[in-house]
Amino acid sequence: MKKIDLLLIKSFLGPFVVTFFIALFVLIMQFLWKYIDDMVGKGLETMVIAELIFYASATVVPLALPIAVLLSSIMTFGGMGEHYELVALKSAGISLSRFMRPLLAVSVALAIAGYMFSNFILPRANLKFAAMLYSVTKQRPALNIKEGVFYDGIPGYVIRIGRKDPGAKTVYDIKIHDHTEDRGNVNVLLAEKGEMYTIEDGKYLIFNLQNGVRYEEPRPAPGRRPEQQEFIRMQFDSYEMVMDLSNFSFEKTDENLFRNNHRMLNAGQILALADSMRHNDAARGAAMPKDLRIYFSFLSDSNLNKPVYQPPKPAAAPVIKKADSAKTALKTTPPPKKLLPDSLKKAYQSRLLQQQKSAQNSQKTTVKKGKNTQNAIAEPVVNLGKKGTVLPPDSEALAQTKAVQPPPEPPDTTAPTAFLSSLRLPVSKQVALVQQALVSVRNVKAFTNSQTRYRQTDRKKIARMMIEFHTRIVLALSCIALFLLGASLGAIIRKGGFGMPMVMGILFFILFYICLTMGKKLTEEMVVSAFTGMWLCIFVFFPLGLFLLYKANNDSQLLDTENYLARAKDLLKEINNRLPFTRNKTKSRAVT
Image (tube, rainbow, N blue to C red):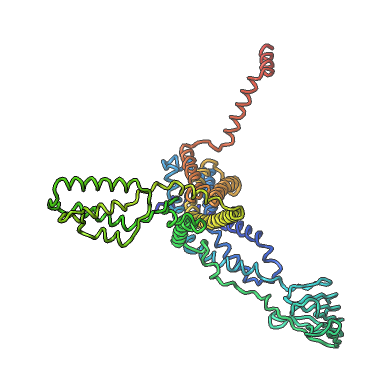
């Protein structure tokens, strides 16, 4: 490392340390102004307040680092420009970018250290700070009994003291209401004077009372009338009363109550928790249609597979089945032998045709299942009047079954009409169905609203987790971006010290903080993603720093006030020359 680099680093570290503690002090004061009401008047020990401030300062270190880098870089390069050191370096052939290289390495190291602090030390500091702050805010106010004022700070008692001796324990005109039994003002103690002090490091409050009276109404005995209830009045010359003040002692809250908060986790734990919540949110969304089916019974799988209308199926007669079997047997049986002459065969066929026509013309729709019908179908031989004449058994069965086969039934066209007429319910049933439908709609609306709220809450939690994750990275990288901005501004304005550099640095940091806060709010409202919202300030200030570095390298008079004043004077002169009334004055002066 060259001497010029060491000189530059030494000139940078001094302003950096000073501005860092100044920024830290300002941020801690902001915390104190925010929580001062929760800390004052509670009798907190000095070590408790110091511990709380220490943890609070640790939580603002990641924000104080970019402020210190910005201010110290402006002061360093502005002071060198004011003393013409930058001009000497440029005349020696050293560019501004080469001159900034060692401090750029320092800013990168600060960015890495800031991220390591935010990822490993900050979660622990946040946990300690949250537990300590909760303990302080829940701490009871210190014992402060004023004259003539009812004091109810001690649980179960209301105390009023008429007068106190300054710097002494003696009190006068004492009135104490005992509410330990939660029965109202049934136990009252009055005393002319007494002593009030604490013992065992403030754990107990002692009242030594003198010349007083105590009024008490015992619990009413069962079976007694109101006028028969007891009333106790006890006068005393000396009476000692002890009150427990253990609730006034400071107790630290258990840290495990805050351990699952995203601010108490490192980057890996935040990503794992956010991924788990995304998975649960997706599972909840996928289960919503299935959960909604319980409110719509007609959308169940069993009902969806049923048709709207099913016509009744007519019952088939057993004789028809036998006829079908006979017809099948006729097709498969080989042709019989010719045992009849042709004349008898023709007579037999004509008789069969007549029987078929008579069966078709008959209007009977029922089939008689008698014993004779079965015998007729099963009998293999039929005598036609002549001896020795034999008919085929299958032909005779076919003729008999055709004779008893019923005609086909016409289609039933009244079934759909009966189905439609069944929908016309009585008015009472219609009202009941409408009310049931309204109840189902309300249940569905309540279910969907609750599920939507749950999912919206989970998504906002995920957004806050990702804000915390990206904020740690962005605040670390802002050390580099603000260093480029501050070094370029210092080289351009060429002013050192705490005057102009401090003003310019605070102005640009306010803009940086506004941009960071705006991105955070947009992310919390889920308008933009966490990456876009939290990296918005880097996307704005890093190119701005490079632009100012380019201008400073080229010796630009970007922030030179004299240059802007000269241009403003030229502009005003041009405007005056173009105005008509000023033009006439200039012409008259030229003529004279």
